[in-house]
Length: 450
Image (cartoon, one colour):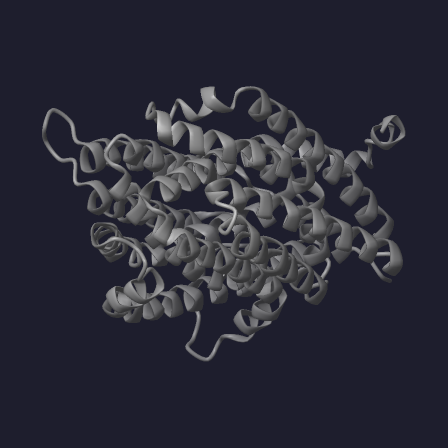
């Protein structure tokens, strides 16, 4: 252990870029995550039916968002590599084509899904109580249209980060959170007896806050002096858009399978009652908050490793990977220890209900243990994708999630009555398996290959 952390170093240029990116990226990730955390906190003060309904519909919407992820990641990777080569024309073409065509296709998809949301959600969560299903329908009516604005925000933020500008995405995220908080207090819980629309209010809050963020994102992309500036394109200009798709396809399918597995888990526990669903949603909210700093550290690998790979500096890529991976492990470990010591105290911020606190606290302990494997399980795929390795991370991630997590919950967790705790035990097992498989791959292939 001492030897492992004694080599916590990399070249001065990479450290400089890391120090430049990290503060804004942490704040950006915090702002992005707080959106869901705040809404879960507000919903936890309404009723378990609204929280359960939102959790079910949100798991469906997250899968849809993951399906669009390839454009965002692909454009970010290509932009970082082209920035490393100094090819500003390709940077401009990539940013414009991927943003415009991606937004148009996302809008078309959302239009179709809006009209078929009720039969889809009813088929997915047929074991749920009718009042929970009704809350899911209400939330999805506003959440599905918001996916268009979510794509624009993610796309524009990724482009700015690839161009070493983390402050603009931060500003956009803060704006979205401020709008979300103000609207949420009124639309979700209500103020002075006015408002308080539960699941419907949560959906409207998400829609209007994302809309504000998307409008500001487009404004900045049109006015920036960086090469990622948005420009007019002809209807026949889509080469860079299709070039970005295969680059980000692995990350997209990876996220699609990951959140698809989470959707399947929601379907599995739909019949276990609102208590288990609400407990899992609370722990998921805490987990998302817990990985803010680790995730910000991990995401820095996209521009840093990708830029060095574009310059064919493979030794520096490996050093960057080790450096960022160790920092991610340190951040995860500190958070995990806090959760193991104070589980009930942390759950107390969400609820004072004794039954819900007991179920959620046990699940949080299982989640804390999984964090020790997160840095080498989840993060490890990021530097691989930033250098164009797409197939192996896809296989490793998808197989570990579906075999280790979902199979464990279905065959062991539910029959033994582990409930929400079983979900997070399965998550820890899948993360551990992924860490081992990717470590073996890097050692055997000598990544990054020349």
